[in-house]
Amino acid sequence: MRAIYRFGSAGSALLVFLGMSSLYRYGSTDLYDNILAAYGIVPFRFPLLDISAWLAVWECTRQGVDVTFLVNPCDVLQRGYASSPLLLAAAGIPLNVTDRTVVGWTLDLLFILSLSLLPSPKWGRELALMVMATLSTMVVFALERTNPDVLLYMIVLTASLLAEGRLAARLIGYGIALLAALLKYYPITVLIIVFRERITVLLVSLIVGAGVFGTFWLEYHAEIARGISSSQGSYNSDLFAAQNLPLPLAHVAGTITRSPLVAQITAIGLFAALLIAVVFICRRLLDKRELRVVLATLPRRERLLLVIGSAVIAGCFFAGQNVGYRGVYLLMVMPGLLAMARSQVREVRVVALGTSVTIVLLMWGECLRLALYHVLDQTDLTFLAIGFKILFWLLRELCWWWSVSLMLVVLADFLFGTPIVRRGIVFLQRHGPRALVRSAY
Image (spheres, rainbow, N blue to C red):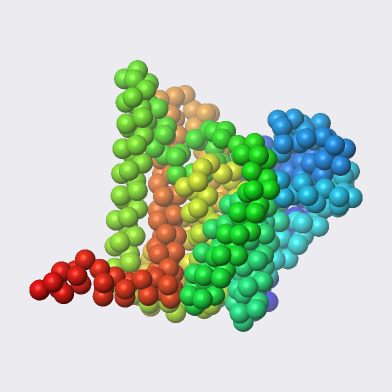
C-alpha cells in the first residue's frame, strides 16, 4: 500500500505516456489526436513539437543563422527564438531536429520519474487529487509538446532537494536555481529561498547572484532585449495571468463608451480592486495564528516545495500571460497544501483542501472549458450559452486569484520567519517613528 501512495502519480503518468506513445507509434494517430482534443489540446501533426524548436535553434545557430529574429528556417513552424541567449552558447552540442524523438522521450521519462521525488500522499483522497493533477491537461500538454519548462521544472526540483541539505549542498542548489533563471528568466523567483539563510550567507549569495546577472546583462543585453516578447494572447484560453480578468472587462467598458480613456481607467481600477482584495485576504489569513502554526510545522520538504512552487506560479501570474504547460509547477504546491489539509484546525483544513481541489480544476481548466462549450453549442439557447461561457470564464479567473492569494500568504509567512526580516522588524521597533516619538518624550 505504501508503494501505491509513493509511486501512484508517477506510475499513472507512465502508463498514460506509454499508452499514448504506443498509439502514435503503431499508427493509431486518429485516436491519439482525438484523445488530445478531448483533453483540450490542439493536436499537431507530430508530437514533441516544442523540444523540436529548441533543437532547431541549435541546428541553425551552428549554421550561422541568427535565430533571435522572427524566423528560424530550421524549425518546422519557422518560430524565432525568444528565450535566453545563454542556451545559444550550448549550440555546439551535436543534436539536431532529427533527434527530437530521443531527446523528447528522455526528458518526458525523466520528468515522470521525478514525480516519485515529491512527498507521498497519506490518504486516499490525497492520492486521488495528486493523480488527477498529474494527469491534468496542463501536465499532459507539457509532456506531449516536451516544452522546455519540463526541463526547467526538473532543474528547479533538483535545486529544492539540494536546499534541504547542509550549507554546501544548499549553495549548490542556489547555483542551480540561478542557472535556471539564466536559461528562462522566470525561475529567478525560486531564489526566494536564499532569504532563509543567516544574514552573512544571504548577503554573499545576493552579491554573487547580482554579479552573475550583471555580467550576463552586460554580455547579452542586446540579445535579451531583442528576444523578450511583448505579445498578448486570448483572455479566454489556456493562458493564465493577472491581466486576464481586468483587461477584458475594461475592453467591454471602453467599447460601450467608445472611449479608450474609460477602458484605461477601468483596467487600472479593476486591477487595483483585485490587489486590494488580495491584500485583505492575505491579512486575514496571516492574522490567524493557527494557519501560521500549521505552516511552521509542515515537514521540511513539503514546506520548501510549497514556497518554491508558490513563488514561481505567483511570479508568472503577475509578470504576464503564461501558456498552460507552465502550470506543472502546481505539482510542487499540491503536497504542501495536502499536508496542511491534515490539520486538526477545521478552518485551515477547509482552506487547504478547498484550494487543492481548486488547483486541480484549474489544471484541467482547458479540458473543462472546451467540453462545456461543446455542450452549450449544441443547444439553441444562444443567449443562455453566452451567459454560461462568461460565468465559467469569471469563475475560473476568480479561482486563479484566490489560489495565488493563498500562495502569497505562504510566501509572506516564509519571509516573516527569515533572519533578515526578523532583524528588520526588531530594528524598526527600536528605531522606527514610534520609537523616536517615545524617546522625544
